[in-house]
Image (cartoon, rainbow, N blue to C red):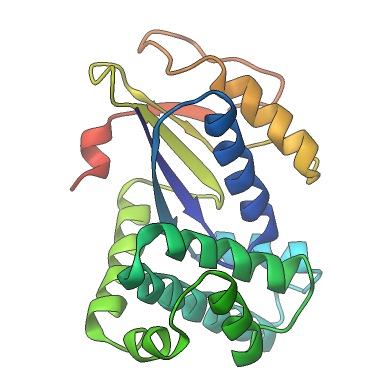
Length: 220
């Protein structure tokens, strides 16, 4: 079984493409997989997102708005997880699609639409997102992101639980082209190597997009 950690911006369409690609890869290859979606946002990932949206990173008013929206989306995702992790992941991908693919505003109407599409209870999510437990869960994600030195969203970390002695693989570059086909091809090429041995020197035309890490650091 594979254990996959996806460090993602909860509103980013590029992250959505990577999420779809790795889920598609594991399904096509009949790999039993446990997914962990970790909401990630810091100065660098927010700047990347603003550039993707065509905003000026120096616009403080817009930066504050973007930061607040991403934090709100992270709270909603953690609140949705109270109703099941799979439904929560579906909600996350639905909200990413509604906001950044279909270009809808990040507001209550769009949130409710994503919630309904995911088979979740809207009122329960809105209530739960303001709880201390949910806020602590989001904070824990941020702390783990910092501890693991995750610098980009998306970042994918893959472990093979059937080979626990082998290290995992961290991937944070998927090619400069933002098309889903290109992302899928690049991710597939890297994942088909399976999990590398510790002494392997990973080289590819995409630059230094991967490094090897230990799963125990991710299970604190």
